[in-house]
Amino acid sequence: MSITKKLIKNTRIIILLIVLIFAIVAINPKPWNEGAAIRSVAKDSSAFNAGIPPPTGKETPVSRERIITLNNIPITNANDYFEQSNFIKNNLGINKTIMVETNKQTYTLKTKGDYKTIILNDTELVTEEYFNSTLNKTLNRTVEKQKVKKELIGTADLGLGVYDAPTNNIRKGLDLTGGTRVLLRPVSDKKVSKDDLDTAKANIEKRLNVYGLSDITAKIVSDFSGNNYISIEIAGANKEEVRELIAKQGKFEAKIANKTVFSGGADIRDVCRRAECSGLDFSQGGCGQTTNGSYACRFRFSISLSPEAAKRQAAATKNLNVVYEQGSSYLDKSIMLYLDDELVDSLKIGAELKGRALTDISISGSGSGPDIDQARTNALEQMKKLQTVLITGSLPFKLEIIQADSISPTLGKDFIKNALLIGLIAILAVASVIFIKYRKLKISIPVILTMLSEGIIILGFAALVGWNLDMAAIAGIIIAIGTGVDDQIVIADETLGKKQDEEDERAVYTWKEKIGRAFFIIMASYFTTVAAMIPLLLAGAGIVKGFALTTIAGITAGVFITRPAFAAIVEILVKHEE
Image 1 (spheres, rainbow, N blue to C red):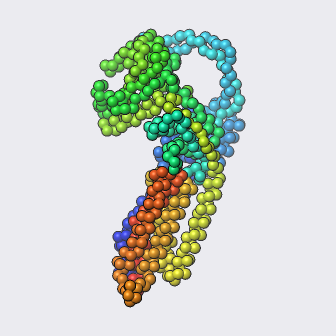
Image 2 (image 1 turned 90 degrees about the vertical axis):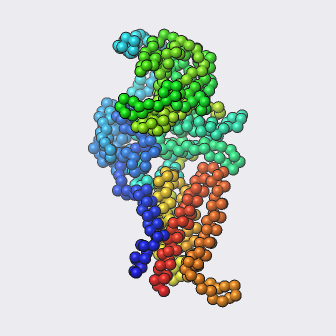
Image 3 (image 1 turned 135 degrees about the vertical axis):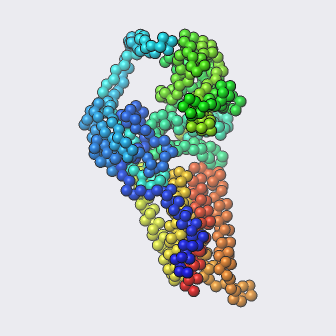
């Protein structure tokens, strides 16, 4: 049998090839990708009003929507977009039509004016239209409104945050793409619970999303003393902008007919998240099938209001009308929920609450899906979102910014270029040293191929699970590949070297025994390295934890996939030579 057939029929080599194929598919290299990928869409901007969707953060990098032409001008990268959008802002004026073509569809934008609002001292009476559900018609009423005037100061930006189109699915951290990293410390007289930290993290993410920022990574980290922090990483945002958003108190308001009935903070005493007072609402049937064939599930949870907030709610609801929908009775106005003046949700008010100053009320809603399991999941996710909104602004502790760093994307680009260059030099140097020692290309070439394979597998796994590749992760990859070279030398020494027994007589080992001796050393080294990484993984802060996780994943892939394949390649090549 030829050497090629032996190589491609070996089980360990086949496993390596299959894993490599999956890794390359996960990385999904597309070096030809051009355009400006959409990173964020500002609220109430021209892009937002035209229906351009902001990225969710869950899509893969290469699947993100990319701008390829702006007003029929080709856009090949982010700089092209910035140049053309600045030209539009400075030269076209307001109410001009702009065509934005992406890789998914074409949008028609209208340029907006950038105004400065000037509040005047007096008020005026204006006519406002509203819908009266009892009469089922639109009516007019006179309301008092504060006088303001807007002064045009120029053409507003289109409202799109963009970056160079990704050419693969490897997510790059702030060290490589640029952005802002903020470390927050809870300030409280008592120990802050894990639930409170999770709530604060969710609130900050929601607040930043409300302001149109995406590519947000929020996580709870700890130091070796057991102190907990919240780490926020935002790609493409500057430090001053993020400081302002995170440092805000966070204003939550619930309004009925444009009247604030309760706010976050002192008005909301408690939001129940326990099983006995939150979950699916089985008193209203729980889940059921709708007329269009899908399923819907209702949820409910309790909140506790202050007596003052309860009185305001009673005053706001006493004159509302009762309407009937699908066998249930509600008031003709809903509770509108606002976070930092942005409408985030609305809730119907049960007819039984009309004019009553209740401090304990139940909030309900629903979630739907194509099947009952998905409907349950969506309902519980919607419930958690509403609970988070209600808690926002009424955190049990303050957050102090203890560190805020802005990272330039230029540094990241230079680092990637240098890392690739040094990596190539290191691979060639290692291969040269191994060739000098063994005088066999059949050993040094498989070493190079194995190092490259380990790098591709680690990057493929990172792309698959959505890891952010930062400098700490790259350090972990270097450690993993370095231990791989170490192990390959052990395999080469054990398989090619001559051994003596205890009585100084020539000992003859079979290939199986030689590989067994090599892998005994390799596995001992593997478990030692994993044991050293576990404390960093469990107790380390964010950057150290990422380094430990990458190292463990890398050496695990090497020990169980690439190094057995390397041993098989060496065995086949050397046996063929003999």
